[in-house]
Length: 274
Length: 261
Image (tube, rainbow over all chains, first blue to last red; front, side, top):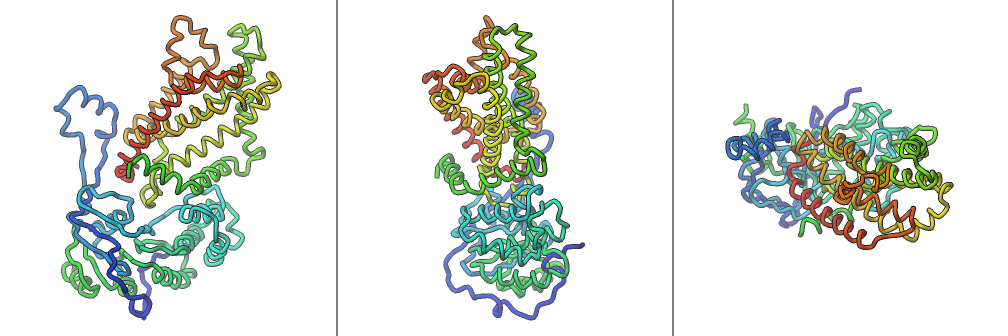
């Protein structure tokens, strides 16, 4: 059964002011000063022991090849995000949105510049379970809970919520590898939205399972996003961004080319990319 | 914060999670098998019995009971070291999805692997231990009185040595091919199936073999009921230096990992 992703085609009638709390304080959540991120592109040259040994004996002749190629994913980002802000990341594929999400959540480290996260950023871009597919859904839920809480206090409540919401029922006791794509997506979605986070880095690509689950999932996502202190949402859907965000950052070739109110950011994006 | 202290802090903070996922892997390994983890002990015991039967003849062993205990402990400890080192080069590759999408400190993956190897070693060891106790009744008392410190060194070694290899393995693709060859050579060169004295004039090689320096005290403690404290502290020092190097390397390459896997 095909899975659906948020922002793909759904309508909304509510504005962020109706569904989301306003940014109530000016407490800094994230600060970036001249931050750049370069991806090393490792080739056979750079990952072969033979070439490393060759370099060590040939001195400077082969040294210029040492670092291989690299891609500048983010360039000179200067930005401050305050607690409670709802920030949309706008841009074409490859513009730097996902790299930015990974950077602020600590998966990537800046190559240069200064980045400070004043609160923990949770990357909601997880695509697999922490435990082996040989193990049951229950074990996957337990692993996820332990990773985020460090103990099992309150686990039963979380477990029941995830099982009920995902609609897996007794299937939760079966190995995850026996689930259909839709079932696995439902479980992952229920897991990821089952805990509250102070600052959320969200990619619209998060799967929500089959279409019958989608409507229910939308409501849960809305509640989940509402509960987060700060939101960073990368999406190609204007509707989704209007629904959750008030501020927009437009990315192009790894730079932020516009930072302002969401409506203005979307106008800027559509004018420059008709 | 100091990178080594930060690694320890993360290891402690995530302790429930990595131990749980390690235990889950152990369970997954034997999921739906008839004998479960019993297979592990059984395979080690059968290897010990078969090797002892053959090599006791090859080496013209006079005291079979002594030899089978010598060989059995050596084989179990070697298998633990070998399994930990052998699986290390592809550790981050196997966790690539989570390395790229979760903001967990990489010490998590190394500790999960260590927890898994630890559980595997203990399971294998218990079964072989019972089997070998038929040949030498003092094994349990020797283990309790003399074996714990050498075991500590063994457990430390099977953490830091694989960590260094898994970082190199993520960086250089040749490591994955190289490790099985090195393990095979080290196995043949180490006095595991035969006493160190059989090496004759080249017995000194064993003293510079870190694998043997970890393995030998465990065997000596359990079989002979003795411990060399000077040797223990030398190996402990090697382990502490190895641990510091491994954690420093892990921190140094942390930023590169999502791009290497």
